[in-house]
Length: 158
Image (cartoon, rainbow, N blue to C red):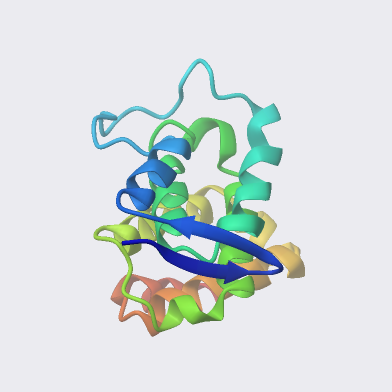
């Protein structure tokens, strides 16, 4: 069985295992240890790769899942500042994700990332309106999905 999804003038053929391949392609792995925050092959130069993925494949809930997991494991040290752009862009450009069922633990990974980001960047969030809008966009998404942590964090920031 083969399904076709149209996304911005492109056609993507999706068969069995597409989500697994996509998640692996984005460096998702259930085998990363909890305290792993960097990987020797992942460099700041890879930022453009994740920007492109967020823009081209962000329509797929698996993309949001894999990126948020990477931002909590092997990409945490490298991409803490830029990950806010990826997640915000995915949510902004793909409003259908509000209604989609997300892969297991997606909200958990987003909550962990946004909590870590806000704790380490509170001064920037308070002084930069564009950054604050991105953070609020992510928190609104979490709240729409039923996240108590998202609600409490938004109340603290506002």
